[in-house]
Amino acid sequence: MATTETLTAERILEATEEVLRRHGPAKATVVDVARALGVSHGSVYRHFRTKVALREAVTKRWLDRTTRTLKEIAQASDETPPQALAHWLGALFTAKRHKAGDDPQLFATYEVLLGESSAVVEEHIADLVDQLVFIVKKGMREGDFTAVEPSTAASTARAVFDATNRFHDPSYAREWEQPGIEAEFNAVVDLVLRGLRA
Amino acid sequence: MATTETLTAERILEATEEVLRRHGPAKATVVDVARALGVSHGSVYRHFRTKVALREAVTKRWLDRTTRTLKEIAQASDETPPQALAHWLGALFTAKRHKAGDDPQLFATYEVLLGESSAVVEEHIADLVDQLVFIVKKGMREGDFTAVEPSTAASTARAVFDATNRFHDPSYAREWEQPGIEAEFNAVVDLVLRGLRA
DNA sequence: CAGATGACAGATTTCAATATCTGTCATCTG
DNA sequence: CAGATGACAGATATTGAAATCTGTCATCTG
Image (cartoon, each protein chain N blue to C red):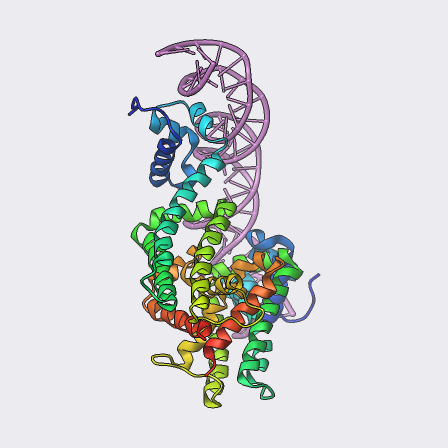
């Protein structure tokens, strides 16, 4: 079980994910993580100041996986801004929906973690909204989108994010399984896109 | 404590609200309610089959108070549909925000109750969406709003409701206290209204 | 001497015994 | 006899003692 590799933050994070997957959020302890790595729990504390910090790091990693994929869509230049926006929102919804649907057990674990790590979640949201700002700005520059006072690209992007809340906030994950959800998602996206258009 | 009045469902509901206010959702028992009324708990069970049914009735009453006020706004004929829609959404937000802000303790209690009574909540949501359908239909009839295929008044109303989720779903109540929230609400309402306009 | 260890104090969780509650119903009472 | 009662069985919650965990740090080791 204990490898000879050096103990890195990365290896600890991987082991923590595994322990979370196995034991769930309530019973995953730092001692378990240390045991999984074949080291003493004191060694884990050399890399992460507290259990909370360790869990936050795991949560951040998990969220960043989604963020990275979306960034490519936001920055791709082969789509018009309205297309890119619809594409991006659809990709966000799909990504979240898969995370929730493919392994509900693990998703439930991360839901608990998300509830604990409000700062990490806020950063993640800020990150996503920034990507929206990028698309909205491009759309305004190219004349696809208009903003009426007192809207700015930032406030508009935030409004788009807020308006699609039900389709990316994990607390609605249960509703994402229901049949009509695709249509409801499309209706909101259409409404938003029409609202943005010049 | 025990009055001579007859024991009615209404009196039981009032007593239950009081017990919930005093003890909170976790510790409010049927025995407590009976005690508050000066009767045996068997008598309470004559009016409500189960504790769950009693709690659902209390929840429904609480939700219906909001619904009733909004219905007047939806059906008033002294406003154009866009005005009525903005008015209605604002009133919904304000009502919920006050419920949450004025007595956070009690609101937390009702949040628990809402989580328990999914059927009641669904009915309440259906009720609100119906009111939106009324406004949207009027707007389409009068030419203020357009719907492009495959939208219907129903799907559009639902989209409006979904898009404003963050401003009426109680799970976001904490965010309603933050400073920029009014502006964010207005940005979403503006976006939605622009999306609906012909 | 950088990095790992494990003993330790205080905080938190677990577990099993005990108490309370839910829902029913035979019995009572005005 | 309509409506209230309270004893009761099974389910759920509370409690407090024991076990485990978190975070620190003096000590050890390659």
